[in-house]
Image 1 (cartoon, rainbow, N blue to C red):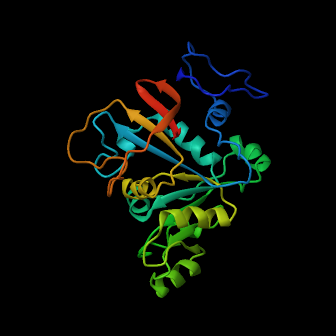
Image 2 (cartoon, one colour; image 1 turned 90 degrees about the vertical axis):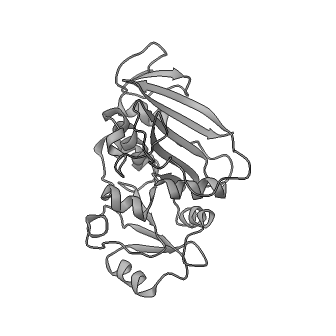
Length: 265
């Protein structure tokens, strides 16, 4: 993996300086963690919402309903690094079902970094759902390192809320109706002390965050594949009134896959 666009200097006690523009080797997890570090809070702490998505050259975010076929080993290293830096990983209920979500695991490589940042051993998974129609017998609810969060609206079915809580999940109200208000979701998570937020989609959820104007950063893997078909884009739903510009912060490459990082301009 080599750097194509400047990122902040990547250094640590064990690996030394990070790769320069001519380097063509696999980055260590420590170097990736430094390159993708959340920005330091300027003044009072606030939540920073980062999205991580993958897209083919022709704009498909999935193939046969899943992102794995358009991913790569390098993409999974970045995926694991971004998870290991986050307080909470946010996903829509449909993505949880389609991708077979499991609890985030604690990783020895990031243990000291998380301890120093005052984080739990692994990020919590937060599932955004209006209906709470989830299988609470799955490991995501029965054996997480930290309790799974359910983000829903105040008008959600009481029996489903009870079922979620009995399964060990923590239900967080983030909307006045049945569904979730994206801005309220960010605020609610920040109120629980979770300021390093990562959303992995799906496209409908990412579109809601974009439309609400609460997305701070997009980490987009461009897969060197073409799929055609009618697969979803990385963000769906109603369009914004005016396109929002983001600034390129870094760009990495490995075996034709591009790993871009864009931040709110």
